[in-house]
Length: 278
Image 1 (cartoon, rainbow, N blue to C red):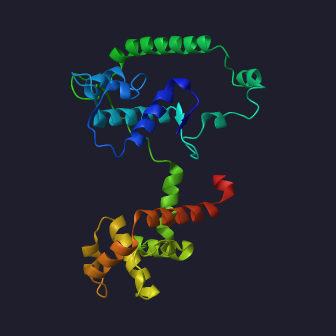
Image 2: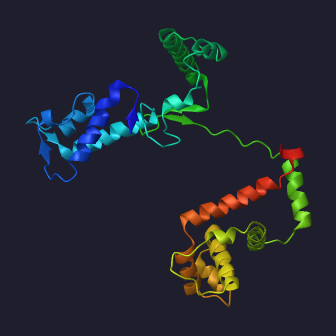
């Protein structure tokens, strides 16, 4: 963890202290022994510091981790080697310091931080006044007196189905009137090789590939349609529930499913008609 803002360096110091005391079994520590200033917010103090002025280790660690989470989300603290939570300076152009005014002008922004925040404050105040004036006359909005969500919005009525979508459904129904989902899944597996993404968690595979592919398709079909493995096994004479359950436990896991979905998505994007979809 790193930070370019000196205000949040105490959080990093608190992390270093927690790391150094991992093997220490002490439950309470004196406040002068741990970083407290700029680390413990006011709402946490009663939970972290007891009536005798001692710091509760467990509550202190939770408080520091909560602070770390919030600061990482706002990029006040960043993670070395990360992508989403990388150094915020890497988000700026390399010549930002030299061409700062040009970039602000291109974005139609002022370089004066006070003027920028004042404009946002005025806009928020105006929008709140507008909201306050419009809510009483809006029959789609209700204010509730209890519950977590005090503003209730009436859902919009669904729009009519586009004529183009109706034509597509009609054409598909004429070309493939009796095609089942299992057939579609099998063809997708043949075209994309998605079944190759499912590797066993065991040390070896004794099943022939043909039998394994069949059971994988049946497992995916049963899970994807929510029919369940027992019902699929009952409708398939040559495969038992125990055999499907074994394949499910050994081959079907989150990483394999993500890889299979990626293969289908990539294959779909590869054959799309650029004249229609761009």
